Amino acid sequence: MNKPVRLMVVDDHALFRRGLISLLEEMPNLQVVGEATNGKEALGVFEKQRPDLILLDINMPVMNGIETLTAIRKLNPDQKVLMLTISQNDEDLIGAIVAGANGYLLKNTEPDVLHSTLVQAMAGNSVLSPEVTSRVLQAVRRSQADRNRSILSDREIDVLKCLARGQTTSQIAGVLFISENTVKTHIRHILEKLEVNNRAEAVARASQLELI
Amino acid sequence: MNKPVRLMVVDDHALFRRGLISLLEEMPNLQVVGEATNGKEALGVFEKQRPDLILLDINMPVMNGIETLTAIRKLNPDQKVLMLTISQNDEDLIGAIVAGANGYLLKNTEPDVLHSTLVQAMAGNSVLSPEVTSRVLQAVRRSQADRNRSILSDREIDVLKCLARGQTTSQIAGVLFISENTVKTHIRHILEKLEVNNRAEAVARASQLELI
DNA sequence: GCGGCGGGTGATTTGAAAATCACCCGCTTT
DNA sequence: AAAGCGGGTGATTTTCAAATCACCCGCCGC
Image 1 (tube, each protein chain N blue to C red):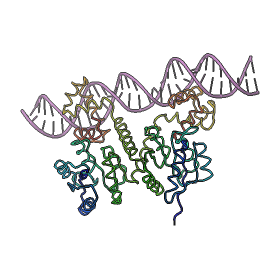
Image 2 (spheres, rainbow over the protein chains, first blue to last red):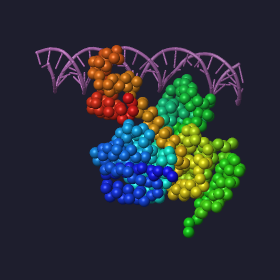
Image 3 (tube, each protein chain N blue to C red):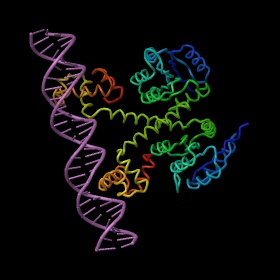
Image 4 (cartoon, chains in turn cyan, yellow, brown, blue):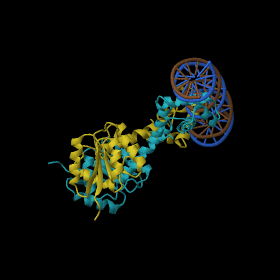
């Protein structure tokens, strides 16, 4: 028979923390072995109890959850930590992920869902509340868009837009007030950077990358 | 009483597809209204049936899942599409996310979990298989690390590492074979880029960003 | 008062990417 | 045969960030 999962709960709101602990202790295979009201206190309790899994709020006085996570990571890089917060802002979310959180749960999580989520986390998976998953995917999209946008220079984008309108080298030169040879050089660089072989492919590729 | 969710399943493997459909039709509040073996065929079925939710494989002949998703997005930007695949490689995962997938599920998903996941998706949330969540978080970390790494030049990092060792401007100049004034200029730029006011803050910030 | 230190302003040089242009060739159409 | 077009090679200039350095000032300790 497996030993129960040893949990630690860190939250500055006493009613929430105590209520959560009460719920957790009613759940099968879970045992709350420690609690703390802020990050500083959490580090002490952590050193003493060495729990299997930590539920960690973000907005706390003295030392916030992300700073606490960073400190815990230094003490034990493999420690499982799930953020449990009301915050859905990107700075907190990305900050927690980058700091190495194994999960990010919102406080609107239903108790039975929390239980299965803890089981998932103990099984080695990262876990997110549904709304958080959506935000993370948005962040991935933005990041990729930024990266794509830096492939071509502004001038190259200008030329590409003209190509997309079906304009010839000569017409593009007229539109942009540069010589045909300059347009051709820009096109050459565009083909190189997008790793394509001709103008049509370049336009398709740029469209795919949402550059035009 | 709510109408059942109208699903469409796209997968080139007949046994998997038919088996999945059989499972789905036994689940409450779900109705499979269409199926296809590749992306091209899927577009035709999609136009005809206009399902509420599409389960879409990635590796398919004729037109892969990501290309199909992109085409479907053009037809209906709000269409809910979940990838259902065995692929865990980052290119497929990021490609699907960027193309606008509402979720990315692996074929090792248990049927009951699949059902609740479909309910989540219909409720407006993005959904990921547990293993995929971990990969996405890793991708976010890498992306952020890349972004951080580009803040400072190599030389500035050299100077910062010396600062972290507690070296003075004069000592750093000796170590790097440059003049004190050059060191000071690098430090000025470091303070500007990290948006801090002095060396100690710079070292703390850089450590936080994992630049040193 | 001087030396050592950090913080500040300003300047010059360097290197690489961006932006520019000339010229050549093959293919297609007129 | 000539014109128009796309694709190719090569060159020069411009721009900007990186890297370099000089000089000044205030504070602190000796």
